[in-house]
Amino acid sequence: QVQLQESGPGLVKPSETLSLTCTVSGGYLSNYYWIWIRQTPGKGLEWIGYVYFSGSTNYNPSLESRVTISADTSKNKVSLKLTSVTAADTGVYFCARADLRVAIPAMDVWGKGTTVTVSS
Amino acid sequence: ETVLTQSPGTLSLSPGDRANLSCRASQSIRSDYLGWYQQKPGQAPKLLIYGASNRATGIPDRFRGSGSGTDFTLTISRLEPEDFAIYFCQQFAGSPWTFGQGTKVEIK
Image (tube, rainbow over all chains, first blue to last red; front, side, top):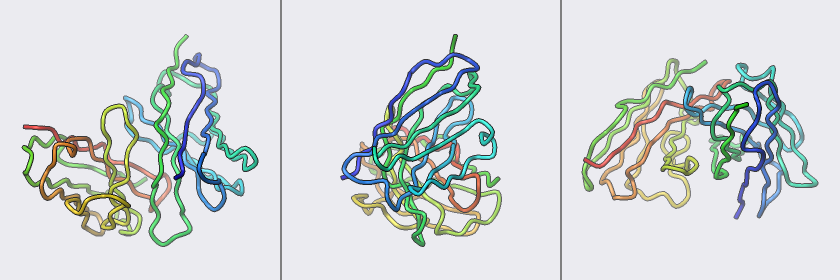
């Protein structure tokens, strides 16, 4: 079965760039949308954005100016970059999978999440 | 942005009780695009219901989703010990996708 594993630095300094990777095992990126979601004390669960395996993206307007999500089908990895971070970006970051081509979509597979703290 | 408001914030119940969780949207949502998730401490959210009323694979039939338009409900017919958790609704209908703030189902 498909499994997702988030990885990356647990501590990022303010104003720097947060970079995370989601490694997909037991399946491939093809034909799915790969989503980043975070859970912060301030806003709860927040959708960051997604990338289709082909590379097209859609971001939350509130984060769009700072976010880049990309997919590497050769490595079966999805990446998240969030620039100019502040303490408000501290939280748990999840990657998830969905098939948005179907009539009734669902985020059916989630990674366990990785905790990121923004602090100097 | 479609705001999802869940109520109550906390539900204190006993095993065997019935739980009714509400999710109200700030504007009408196509039912196909409303899901429910369960989250336990230290874990990722787990898909329970998609398309407002379809149980995800492996989800027991004591979980039932219903509703349309702006009002959606998750019903747990008889609470089992493992059902005490936080439940979130989520919509895909418009960008940005949004989540409710959650309902905590706790043991009374």
